[in-house]
Image (cartoon, rainbow, N blue to C red; front, side, top):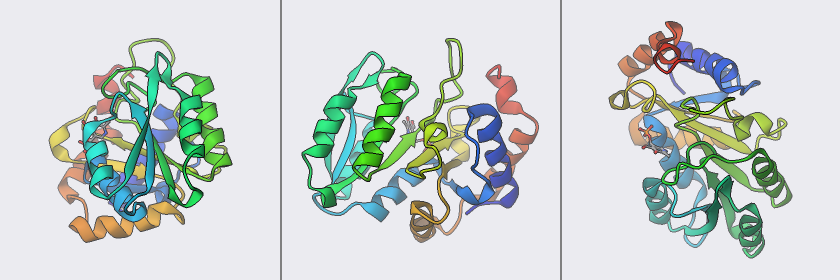
Length: 230
Ligand SMILES: Cc1ncc(COP(=O)(O)O)c(C=O)c1O
């Protein structure tokens, strides 16, 4: 799952900087970049013909490619100024057979490629849809700490009300150094996270330890916060 010290510091970092409480070290899986989380989640959950619900214009293209690689049908909903059109998202979810609905994949802050950030109402609606239709939400948040306007946005994960429907992904790639290849997934340790962790072990046994210690030290010294003015 990762170097214990790093998992502990990521857990604290999420609480203090991102407003995501209740995610102790056991809820943190360190990965080789967020990319590995996306791959491992897809390998755990997706089977030929399953539906994945995303933002359109096409979401982060490598995520899209991974979903397709595992045989998923990507069901995109249009972006508006304040994020995905959640009514269209709900209609897409409703139109799929329950067994085929796999997860919603969104980037609430600085969506790639549009740069739009999601409004609070839409966040609440996404969580309602997930709950009503029994879906997981993959919240990909590489840019959560990079914010040019006012208050720091609240991650979906912090609004989940302990339901455990949101798997939160983030990375040191955009705020420290992409070449370290360190990211993480946070979620209910007994749920999807444990199967993601099994898949992750099949890919690379464990994440580069030297890079993990570097990230751990950077968190301890508050390097990221100092660099981006947090
Ligand atoms: C939205 C998004 N998710 C995930 C990634 C993958 O990042 P990492 O370097 O942590 O694998 C990127 C990289 O650009 C990205 O833009």
